[in-house]
Image (cartoon, rainbow, N blue to C red):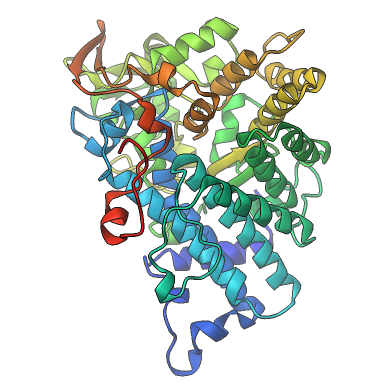
Length: 521
């Protein structure tokens, strides 16, 4: 795909800044390089700071993606056997505590994004277009991180500026304060006039960075989560009526592959490069963890030719998710068969379970839409398949339509809600609805956005989390060619009242006497 010069420059800087865990922007410069205080005075340096912010987000994506998806009711943790990744198992089975490493990392990484954003917002000196755009982008991503903190942790501290040493031990905040920051940051970014809009839905260049419509989508989502339905509907309509985005019209699953990075449906995705020289700098485990468990499978035929191998087999779809698809669109559903496959479908295309082997954390269903193809790989390394250049998706236009459908329905405008949900249904090959209920929207959203990091927060805000996941973790299946058997059992498991908020990580409580733990933890 064609990339503009700005994209190439941005990605080059991102690759360089990802070599080390310590950003050069965070430490004092020596010699004639100057200090951090005078770094943010040129367009070039501010662009480097912006690249560092995007890199920070890309670096935290793994924990953000897996923590939220494993907490949902759509997936089994999977892996090679019991204990293959105990942290992920505990999340999936609701046996985790305040010392969960993935939750700690997610919490810290969200504040890492906020810190990089605050550097740009507070330190940039000058009034150039590059600088003003960088500040607007930084506010978008500070708001995004704050949204994740308030919806996941609830009482996390508000950090709306670079902290001085005497401010480091921030106490808990009220959710209203975090929501206020989210709204103000996004409103200021939208009204700044510095965020660009795509020229049309097929503009692949402008959308590689934050756009005005992305900020509007984030703000509309924030309004909806607070129950501000009319405000959410109006803001999300701005995105829809812009005509800058559209539902992907090709085969549903192709939009999740490298060949269609930055397609018309992408609201925002973190960029990857098909560059062998920078391969190890941008390597991540997102796709290798989700791919089918290669070590216990035989590969031949059609799928053997196209699927990347060397995968680890985490994130297997639950039968309940497959059954929800079948109940909604039938076993031959167009979207279903581009999302989840049965063992029979997989084996008919050349992938079979090896004799005497089993799939841990599986009921015999295989996620398809997120599988890496050989052509998605910078280098096809079947021994360690962690070098894809498929972009990391944060938000799709389909989510905007479903958010807007819910907002309009709740605000009393069922005709617009019906229009928006039917756009999703038409693309999925489903019959248009003649009327719409909240239950319809919930189901459509589960199926359309499964394994895309939205389900857990939705269940919590709808008040459906306990009923959906109270039994989660009670037992765990093992699949063989004779079927699934539930072998592993837990005494303590399942979503409870306290799980409406994740715990403030134990490390934060131990280091900060001003913090108190969330209720129930």
